[in-house]
Image (cartoon, chains in turn cyan, purple):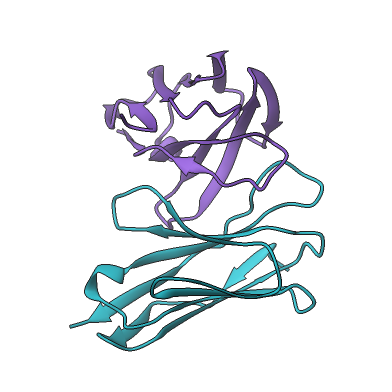
Length: 111
Length: 114
């Protein structure tokens, strides 16, 4: 089993719709979770961090965490063409010093 | 006032050459990283330094040698370059090793080996 699995893309959504990105992880001790956005040809950019079970909202982004299910998700509401990018899930390690990144889900928002 | 900077941005070289990539962060962070992102876009950690001390050394050929002269700088030297080394190399930094591990990435260096 991979350490971090994300829903396979590409995910195509119409402008204004909700894009839903899923991530499961294998390390039960992970306490912090990060979502990065990477535009084509650019570096990953941190857009959301979540540490507690439940929802965390930041603008049009909502992260949801369920540690018991080892599941974290990212919702993008009112999707805009500028949201077209690859989204990387990265849980923090429990007994290691490195983040494990998922393979990423590529989102395309159709105008 | 770039937070994490890398030079060069592009590097084209021939097989067998030796090259270096430099990274600097002005965030006051203690920990720095090198990542490799291949053509499949998978981001894989190579090395991590904390306060100039090597902490993470993943299974990377010993042709790759990181050096951290101080905690604001982390360089990557690559000997005897091979075609398979072609990738984008990202430098990143975080406040420290203890978490929550928010990492900030440099713009990347696209290495092409011909």
